[in-house]
Image 1 (tube, helix red, strand yellow):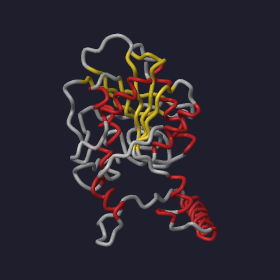
Image 2: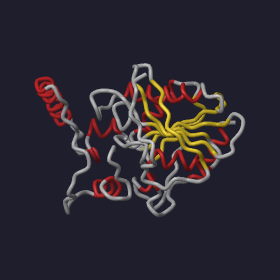
Image 3: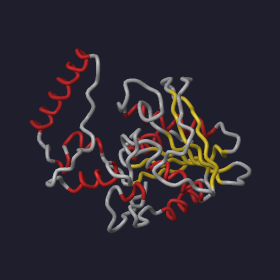
Length: 270
């Protein structure tokens, strides 16, 4: 495995819990990429525990929403693993900040590999949580991997539809989709010529006054102290009066249904 340089001090966007033990771990996927993760174990736990692997939102790092989910679920008795996907954060993989549905689905399966081989995990009781764009990756993994006994896709972002049709289906025509493909493939040529990869736009900064709500929503999380981090992606449960990023960290509204998550994983990770 690649020798990763991992930050050992607490650098999450949420406070450290005194109810769980935290440590940094690494594991590898089948593409040979070493992944970095935060392991959260309930204090004074004994025996083999039910375990949950967590990742997302798309483009985010484990110090943000996935770590918050993982630590909270560990407080509720689960051994949890919040990991940076390939090419992202402290994990390996080149070029940086790229994405691949195949490799990122494999990342979840690699997390299950790692958890299945731990002495303190019951391999018959492993679940996964995917947040935002990683909800789709979690569902991909669950469809492939019979070891995954329970799956939650939280505030799932349908990247396939947005990439095909644009936000709010604004590009829902054959001509618009063809123009997008032309632009993407022209960029591939330029990237190859230049020997580097141009990243997608990310969250706009500064925020325009006429920005649509979803852009303001992302800005409120990723570009403020609420969610910013220097290294920073099966049941429908509607959270009334919550917006997308409220399900990243609660948004001050206790919007994340942790009671429901605990009941769900307790039921299906028997």
